Image 1: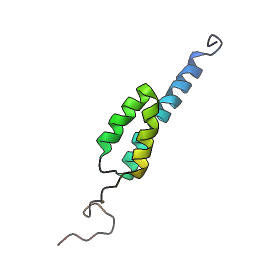
Image 2: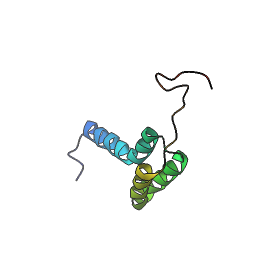
Image 3: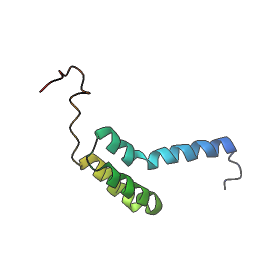
Image 4: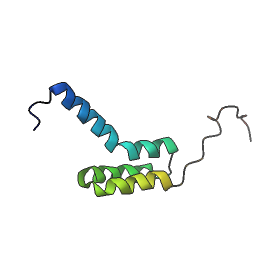
Length: 80
């Protein structure tokens, strides 16, 4: 079945697959969710089982986000 697929195609498929499996963790990181570690743990378990991947994606999209740091926000004034 895979005998006609070259090593470059296998590498591309593997990299795309790894990116797809990491989507919940990337979404949670970009959204700055409060409990990023839990999303990553559920995502790792989801990679192994497949079912929890959807749970991790739901968590990443629905969890509360952290407030941005005022000192790092563009245009913010330092002070009280």
